[in-house]
Image (cartoon, rainbow, N blue to C red; front, side, top):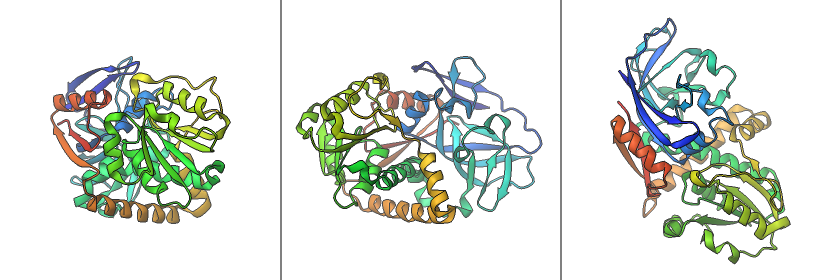
Length: 362
């Protein structure tokens, strides 16, 4: 029996649980029991962009209008009809918000393999890879919670930082990050703070100003209502993790042509999404992390890219392990109904920023 969390594709406020018998495996398939799945603002972004960026297609719900939100985390192979994948293997990868998943391993290597399910063939390869924990240099048993919560987000942070540096900061010396309390935003701020000559400004709700300030990675933290305190004529870059249409318009109107670049990364303000047309200054673009990863793989080669990302990841974990107060406190929610409630609280912005939610729907 597997329980899956379903979300209305056109109304993220509507969720339900679906329980059903495990489907029988075909030759070459494996069943993975999922026990450590991350719930972060990233999941809300996947749902908000589900149709536009094909996120609903990874794990089809099989019911019109309903979708299964993908997430990152860990599972263990509980049944295998593939000779190259053993029962008991621990895997890291991209999963449905469910108690288990059926995959079709292909292109097996000591480090991992890809899911060759036909419906995923045209989707971006980065989401189809599953890593064997025994051969994953990023993995340690003690850091599973942080890896589930932060690894894909920090990878995006690292690629944003690299992209901005690769483009000479678009001639600016100030970078504004909205939703500054979100994990991808403060991962980005942590990296930007190490750059010479770049001021990092975090924009957040009044309730989260103290949290963001406590991290120590922002040069300045402002509530959204204090945007006018920033000098309008000085060049800056806007990295939008909130997706709040009114805030985006306010930023563009305040800075105008002094805003040298504007990109959207996430949608934590899911109730305040909107278009980006008719704005002053540059046209906002969507930052797609795999595109920068592909560029750097071509520039440096895959091995060098992974070495640089691994070194940065390990340094970030070291920062987290010594931070006082802690930046992130993992909390595991067990049971399908509790996981549904956790997703709804996350969607509604009711999770404290220092809390890192992990769910087990089994």
